[in-house]
Image 1 (cartoon, rainbow, N blue to C red):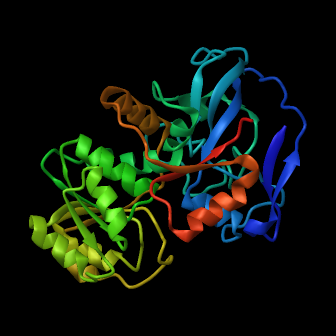
Image 2: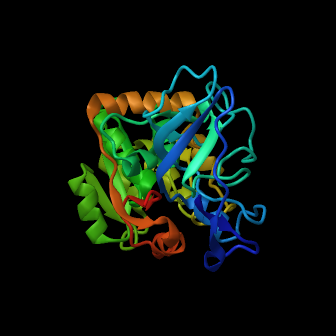
Length: 335
């Protein structure tokens, strides 16, 4: 069985192809899945570049999509031939997040999906959206569910409200698409005019180049009289502008730490606006099922930048590192 592993000390250059033993048959309550695709997330990047320490030989990648090839005794939700996609938090099935750590997240605390076959408990997967390719399905595990969680369970976003999204990575593009599907207006930011054009083509109502307009938060506020929801990707470097952008009672979904893990926050301004700053750590299996029901109902498709072969995983992360991508970067696992 082909797989990729993280060798420590981890760098992109030490991502290593390996040949693993054939996977065992599924036990009671388990399914065997032949994986066809994965997709890259910033969390995966932090694992493979050594920022998040993992055990030597860890199989990376939190996203996995493929086809069920066998089911164990007692499994009734799936059958051989079903197209499925993995969940991110394997212990978070519904309700509140049971633990604030990543010990049971594939590709981090446990082995992930950069391999050909996996045998897991059945509830580590859900059905894939109808009509999706395996690559399209693989995009939703982390980025898709994160955007959904930010705008729906944690929002909730209501038609006529305004959503601000930052950049053109997977979460931001999904958030733009979901917000428009819910009848919201969208303000999008980027440092690239070419990417702003593409965001406009996807439905963004207003775009701001944050490089030429460093006070983009004030500009966003003026556009709509106060943003209702911000999908905050940057972290401490962009959070003050996001606070400037929101209106009274505005909601900021804190998702990313692209600019660092700590920094000064204008708490008096956030308090004065009665703003709500809420951390988002992807979502539950129930959230993923609800997202897939919405996708099946409205036909939204993910934006895939490009795909790489499994053995080109390091090159895929270098492409992510360059910032040149728009939407999701995928990995083709099946030969």
